Amino acid sequence: MDAGAPPVKARGLVKRYKEVLAVDHIDLNVRAGDVYGFLGPNGAGKTTTLRMALGLIVPTEGKVELFGRDPMREGARALQGVAGFVEAPRFYPYMTARKNLQLLAALDGAGAKQRIGEVLEIVELSDRAGHRVGGFSHGMRQRLGIAAALLRRPQLLMLDEPATGLDPAGMRDMRLLIRRLADEGITVLLSSHQLPEVQELCDRVAIVQKGRVVYEGALSDLRRQGGAGYRLRCTDEQRALEVTRAQAGIANVALGEHGLSFQAEEPAVGALSLALAGAGVGILALTPELATLEDLFFRLTEGEATPPAAPLREMAEAR
Amino acid sequence: MSAVAQAPPALIRDAAPVGARRPSLLTIWRWELRKLIAQKRTYLGLALVVILPLFFVIFQSARHHHEHGGGQGVFVAQITQSGLATPVLMLTFLCLFMLPLVAALVAGDVVAAEDSNGTLKTILTRSADRGQIFAAKTLAAMTYATVAVFLSAAVATAAGVIAWGFHSLTSLSGTVVSAPEGLLLVFASNAIYLIALFAVASIGVLLSTVTRNSAAAVVGTIGLVIGLYIISGIPGLEGIHPYLLTQQFEAWQGLLRTPTDWTPIAHSAWVCALYAVPSLIAAYLVFLRRDVAGG
Image (cartoon, rainbow over all chains, first blue to last red; front, side, top):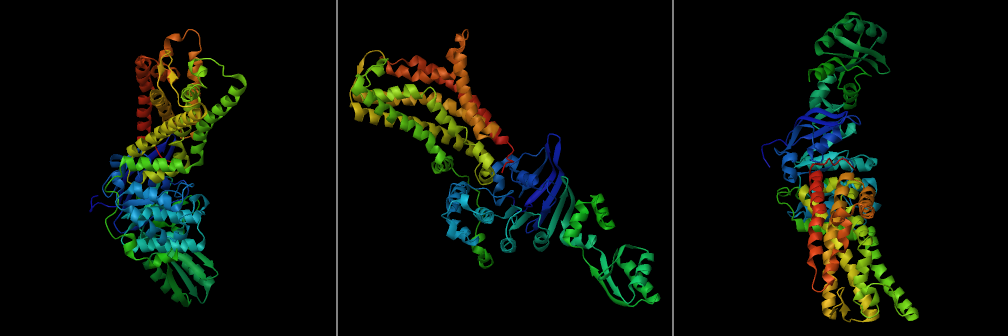
């Protein structure tokens, strides 16, 4: 393992199944210490990308490296320090949880067997260790999947929808676990549909749409660039609506229950406040509102249905 | 899972990550066997090869009291005179279809079942190379075939000896061999038969790898055996008979002649290799480069 190499570096990754282009020249850059969200609608190519990263499927073009090693060329050696699961973690249903972990520990070597009790405790499955996995609930299997990953003492954890199918408490616990692991310095690549989960956990994200990355970068940048929105409460909303609409540099003006909302860059907002004062409208509150990840996600991935805000559209087009 | 928040960091990351050293093939093979042992269906094939000799001995014992023997062939004629005739007869019957079926049951399932259950991706993302996993699975299928053959032979021998005694055996050439030598020949015959059975298992592993479907692989393997029997019955194709896999199933009988006739055994060895080696090489190459997209 090259200590200086990034945990995940994908370049021009393509996967084609006959006529279907599942992954279309994806580039990813996961840095050490990232909690990296990998977002996209169903069928966007997230799982296929993760499978290529783990060496489970062969890329049609391009390559992916984990800590500088190509799983296609170096096989299991490239997975040193890497663990995780793609889609739902799968186990042998006719064997107990402990037996499953013993098997995986045997395939890992290097003292993984000694940690079975510890990882079972971490995911709170110690009392079910002697039960067959065939009788486990979905949530228990997800937790066992995390336990199996932790056996490898990973430096990079790749998790595909880890909270899917969990109840609210299970989802909260899963978030806590991921946060905990990230705090310990483990790089996490988290593929998820749970946008609040990604917003809470991730510092960097890649959003994929139809096999292409439409955004990759810091989540804070995305929210800042995409969410130059403001909310205005004032003494005369109808008059304010007319003034705001007439003002240059202001878009998407709407009057709602909680006042006026619009999108604008800072200079235009300054000019608006002066214009409102000149029109005799008193400003009660003028507050900036960052767009939620959910807003941005839908703007980027459902571009045809909801036109993206100008900065986002430019950003997506520039890529 | 609320204990997560309290989990000390040392539990999760207190040393270098694992995976720097690959597990040995022996370790992976042992776990493949444990998986087989943990599955009920594994015992179905074994039960067949155990029950049939027992049923045979019980039936023959009852029949002997009423009819005083009978039947055709050297070993059929001495069935009640030496318990060692029983395993030879059982191998004669089982080698043609039942043992290939039992070998195909596991060989056809060994890769495909893991693929359809999604556990292939689980084991392929650990520290063992694909080649090791494939080798261990192939070895496990061969081990199962070996166990089936020798278990059947052991049960048939034990049941035969209990019913009719541990006596000398008359070989196919008419020579009488002592009971200990007869016992040795019984187990050597089973060992020779394994050559052909390994070829069947190799084809099963290939179909299991290529089709990713257990039923298709098992049925395909057995279908091939049946197909070869049909071909061997077609007039005008006698020239290819020596090269049909099914013709090798009885090569072990060369051991039961005096002196030992090695010609059919040697011939069987290379013909079986012609079926087994390309099958395994093809299966290995497919397994190495296959997309694991199931599960």
